[in-house]
Length: 177
Image 1 (cartoon, rainbow, N blue to C red):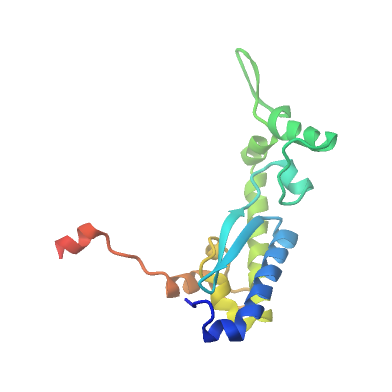
Image 2: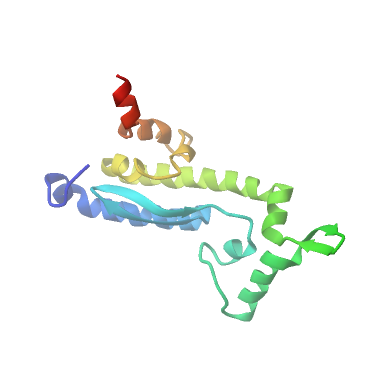
């Protein structure tokens, strides 16, 4: 951890903020995942991260969510939520929407595997570009399991996570000792 104004921030602060912006841009562009984060104590923390959940709106409009808006956004929202009937009940067809249909046929799982590869690519290439701040960039992200050594780089997200995170004992375990 680093404190604001210490020697590390004076030396790498601007480079770290640039690395965060490049990293988030690559995730948005390549993986089409929603991610927003911040710098806290000299590390990047993603406050919001979301992979594809099966809705068409995420694919057509990128990572943004639209509530209302123009007619085509409303049409895509209607298709996402009401168009696909899954099964017939005694009361009529059960309309579950395309997100549930995509999960049911396995398309969501397939796209999530592709997104995990693109997350890995974004992390590996960004860390090659900014090697001085790679630990600070990747140690607190929630998708660290997606980062594995590959043709783009040799960073292992799980090893980096274990390097910095330690499991704390509960108060009950302290009493037993």
